[in-house]
Length: 217
Image (tube, rainbow, N blue to C red; front, side, top):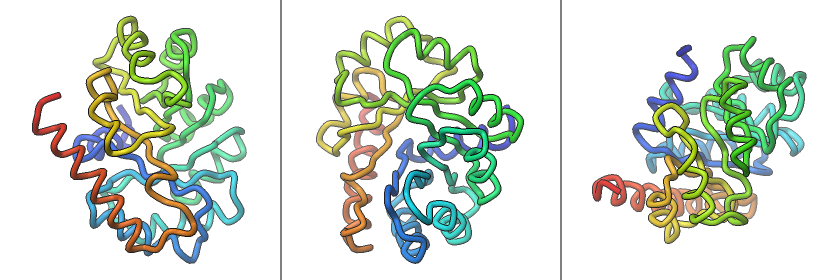
């Protein structure tokens, strides 16, 4: 296990919550990152499919403590993987499973979380060396779909993060179905949200997660 994969596992042990900052302006990235960290988030992802994403990754990396894992989302090509890694991203998240991107991540030493929906994709991702799986779009499958996937997929070495439609009130059901963590996007951050809005929403997610963890679910 390389240092970036270990960092992802350590961050997840504190709070398996990935903040997905889609559309964040570089000028806001540091402030939002500080709000998220203060609330308890330790994994922050900036999707690449918006202007200024690489600058936002740099800003988050500079503002966040060393124990925070900074990720790039919507990584679709080798070139994007290299650019994101150079900007400071150590976790590469994909909406799909792409062998070239996975290979580039291995060369770079980045942790990976490819997007999957089916057992075929999940097992292919494991074969390609995925460090975690992104169940996406999770709202299409629902907790019962995850439960069926978990029935055939070994759980010890392959954490599953559900992404898509996650809200504080749905986290317990996802956890009971086998989710190891959660990727949270528009329920946590939109460009129209103030830093205070983000802080309040982040605190709500962390509070619910802590209750779930304490209950032993």
